[in-house]
Image (tube, rainbow, N blue to C red; front, top):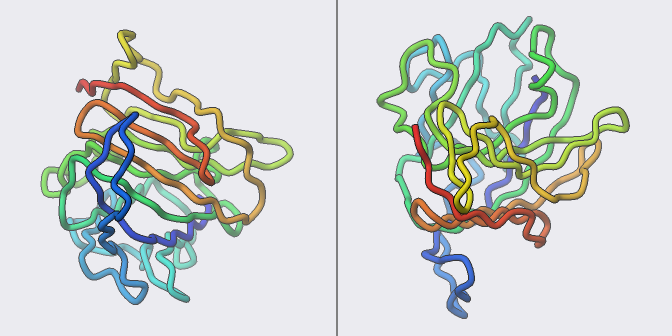
Length: 215
């Protein structure tokens, strides 16, 4: 797995597709830039709240997913949850991938991360469960050999309806540009309850979805 650095800016505004937000947006900071207060960790094979091998950490004011204390990766998929659930909101952050992939990481896991929204609560995650039941906005990094869009929509343990079509494929690609090497990417996710979703990359809308989630 690659290391992932995330810089959360601010968050949370009721909004919807096609409706202009108010001139003044009341943003709520989720990440304080100093520690993981307010966040809940769940890593496969470890109990809720245990930060196995210091996978999630804060360094230089950013939240990081790091595998520096791992010798090899053995499917220890990890997720970090914010303490407060939201249903309608706007989320802004910056992310980038750094370093080399850890030995044992799956090929599809190369420069691969994301945000699980409409997500199963952390208290209900099983000890050895890979991923929560959720809809995911997927972060992907590119190389000259692997050029892939980012902010795709993926469906761990779910299907979605886009317009009137039932989507059973695991991921549906966005229209984003490719982002190479260690570049920072500005990501914005606009979620209106269980219907309208905007995926925005560096200020450009790459997907506008009208979806219904199904287990």
